[in-house]
Length: 159
Image 1: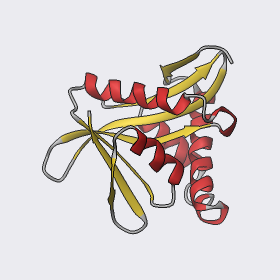
Image 2: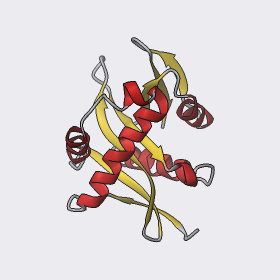
Image 3: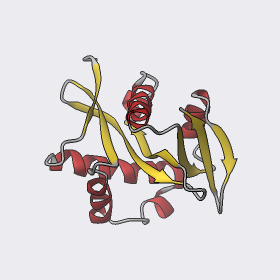
Image 4: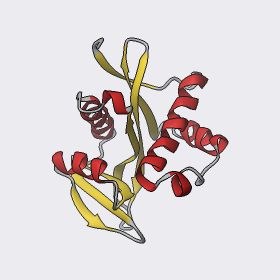
């Protein structure tokens, strides 16, 4: 494999926007199954969601090796109920063929660095309680698991 690097998605890279959106759907299908996850959002909605994160208080990072896009993470700044700012990992995905090679760790490192660069002192992600792979990944980095509404959980960590 070529050297792994993590770069911000360029706003004019429509192929990358489409691929990130397709992988967002792949995440939903992997975690929730085809019937539930595949029917949640249209391709257009997912692509719009990616574009919404190409703004100053958010970012889309791609894990790359040569020309291959191995995965992505989407981060943004949020405000909690008490008015405190924190960084949110909105989604993280690694292509199955590239898993267990450090790609997810590199994406999380870049996302957390982006958050610290904005002066944020805490990070979180929300996921389905059955998303064991993502939960294990975040717990291995010191994130604490908390129950949330419905079938969701929150993982939080100080940066």
